[in-house]
Image (cartoon, rainbow, N blue to C red; front, side):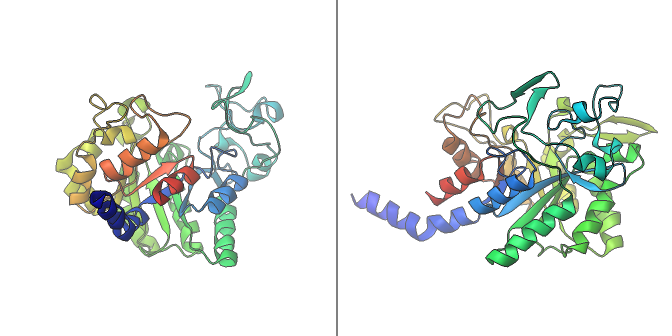
Length: 347
């Protein structure tokens, strides 16, 4: 009884402060409940209490910053019905080929499997191609969140990701500079600002740190997203050719002193912070990824916990939250279910 009493007392006195330091980041909004990156999804994430809400941005034909996860519109809109002749040779309808006015005419949807298969990508989520949702710009979303902060007396932050800057460069557009200019316009200019700026394109983050931030008189928090090489998420230009980026640079601890000079944090897929061979339900084993990052004062924000898509080694979403935030010691985590993350921390 005494052991239980002192354990409860310890958690009551100190446990909450430990949990309060952990960030629950609303991945594309409350995307488990409403179509991702719609303003409705962001309002729900805000209402659920998420301290940070994520915005992926892609540029339109007329240089507007569009909040959407993919470069293309195929599986989250009715673009194939409204603009059937606008697909590229690879079969995709690219955001960058449409003006903001054209994009606003689209009906956005919960993600579905394909043009001829309207079933949900995640079966138990909001029905695909139902209700009425529209695309929004980064400016519109910032104004929404800042407006809610004013009326509700809160200070919810934003977590902006530039999608494939290397692709935009090939299309003659500088998405990173455009995004930073918008952030500065709305008051996000220094380390104290409630904003993180992240990208999978580490070579571009180096340019952001060394060139763009000084040019714009800014110094905001940067995060290097870390993926797997076979995703082909990022390309870099070498000897005049675009080649796949090798993410092993960002996972090799010997590079951390240099990485820490560029970014304030890293965002790995959560599989990279565990020993997935040894992990099993009831015993998820962390590796040294987070510890190594913390040695160089790098924050670690893994992605993405989904209660309806758990890895084989997690028996429940609570077990996965615990493994990421406490066993591995990450500083925060992206999740489609911000309400469940916050409930876990509260418990």
